Image (tube, rainbow, N blue to C red):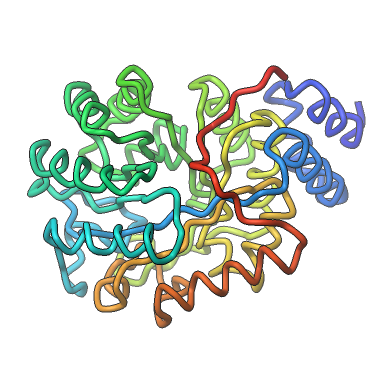
Amino acid sequence: MTTKELIKKAENTHLLSKDEIVKILKDEASSEDLFVAADMVRKKYVGDKVHLRALIEFSNICKNNCHYCGLRRDNKNIARYRMNEDTIYKLAEHAVKNMGFKTIVLQSGEDLFFDSDKLCSVIKRIKTLDTALTLSIGEKTLDEYKAYKQAGADRFLLRIETTDKNLYERYDPDMSWKTRIECIRNIGIAGMEIGSGVLVGLPEQTIESYADDILFFKKINADMIGIGPFIPHPDTPLKNAEGGKFDLALKVMALTRLLLPDINIPATTAMETLAPNGQTIALQSGANVIMPNVTLAQYRKHYELYPGKSSTNITADEGLKAVKDKIASIGREIATDYGFHQKKSC
C-alpha cells in the first residue's frame, strides 16, 4: 500500500501494523494528508467541542532524578515549593466557580509529603465543587489508586514517556519500566480513566519506538494520551541534546487519533512552546483538549519541566482568554460537560 492508502486504512479501520505506522511516520510528503485525516476522525468521534482542564501545579518537589526533567531531584537551581491544602482548594474553587472549568487537574512531582491521607483530603474537598478531577502525581500502589478513586478522583495521568525499555531505564535512573507499566494498568483496575503519553525526540528514540508507543496506547485501552516534543532543560544531563521536532510530535499525535479515535488528546503546552500557534495546529490535527494553567504565577515560574514554557508570565485569567481566542479562531467551541471518555464502537 502507498502511504496515502495506509492513512485511509487507518481512518476507516483504526488499525495499523507497526511497519505500516513506521512507513507513515517516515513519509514527510504525506504529512498533510495525515493531519487532515486525524482532524476528520476527531470531528467524527469526539466532535467540535474543545474540553478545557484547569491545571494546578501544587508541588515541584520530586524524589526522582529523570534526565530530561527540570524538576529532577538533583537540580539545585530551582526554588522548591509545596502548596498547602487551603491554597490548592482556593485555586480549584476559583477555576470552577469564576472561570467555568469542569475539570481540575492536580499535578506535582513525586512529593512524598502528600501521602494517601493528605491527598484524599484534598480530593474530597475539591469534589464538593461539582467538578471532574484528574491526578498527575506519579507512581503509586494499587491500594493508593483505589483510595484516590474512592475519595472521588476520576482520572489519572501517568506518562510512560517512552515504551523503549532500555531508554526508559537509562533516562529514568532507579526506576523500573516494568513497574511503570504495572502502575498504568493499576489505574484502570482502580476504576479511574487511564491517561498516559510520551515525549518525542529523546536522544536515540527511533521511528520504530514511536510506532511501539502508539500500539502501546491501544493495548492499554487508554482514555487520554498526551504527546509533546522533548525540550532540553539546561539543568539536566540532557541539556545539550538536540530536542524534539514539532512536526514529528504532531504526526505521532495524529496517528494516535487515527488508531484511538474516541479518546481525549490534549494540545500540549510543549507544542505551543516549540512552535507559534502550536496548540491551534494540534487542535486541527486531532487534538480536542487544552489544559490552561491556573497555578499562581509565583509558583508557576518554578514548575519548569522544560525551559521557555508558555504562559508563565501571564495571569490565569489572561491565559484562559488566550485559549478561548485560539479555539474561536478555528471555529470550534468550548465544551460544557465534564469531558469523560465516551467510548464508541469503531
